[in-house]
Length: 297
Image (tube, rainbow, N blue to C red; front, top):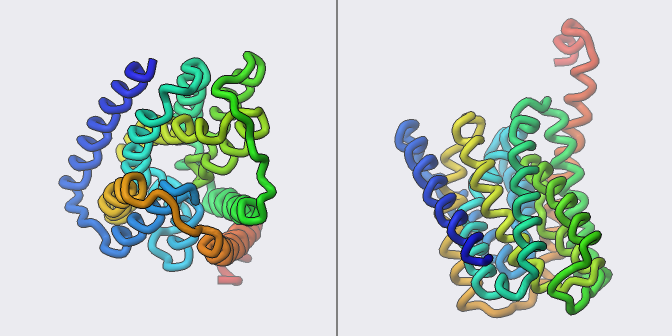
């Protein structure tokens, strides 16, 4: 069953690379240096368990690297190649121990949700995207704080779940897949959910990484074709992220992350406040008449 998941994953990686490179060549896109460094940092710590979506979104907003409406899809497309690398590593190391029905079901559920979410985020109003990203950043900050304070459930020792919980997990992953298009990372909610269900937290990693890679590939290809992304940033995140994942996975086994999480919380909360204020302003302007909006401007 693991081979049956790795084969389409490898094929999807090749498809993603082909589509991205062709689009980059056609548009003459050159990797952004700052994005390369950002990709290296966030993906290094993502492999160690911190997560990459919230820090990346916060930095995008803090540095104004990407317009707000393009943050979710640019982030998703750029962070997908490092997720592919993580997925292969975790699937080989831990995937063989996970119930294959749970593993494949959650990955497919996440994939379907990610595909459903692509047109939703590309058609959504700017203030709605800002609102969702702002809320996601606050939830991520809460998750980081709970992790540091040891308030997350410890999890169990199971490698499989009863049928009812398996179905619930698959449905939840479908929802996580939709939300990932809006910049909501799947790391924290998936880990909490499986821990509450009694699954060994280690076995959540191949599920999370496999789902993020396969669904990220499918959604990314569609986002690239639609064209509402910043290719310079995408290339930078990908180029910087892949070697960082390999270093973290094979050379750095562990490191003190508590202080880093507190620092990330500050940055993420700052970006959340700025994003929510922008969403509030955008919503107010939308309900005004054109004359009123022009007068305010």
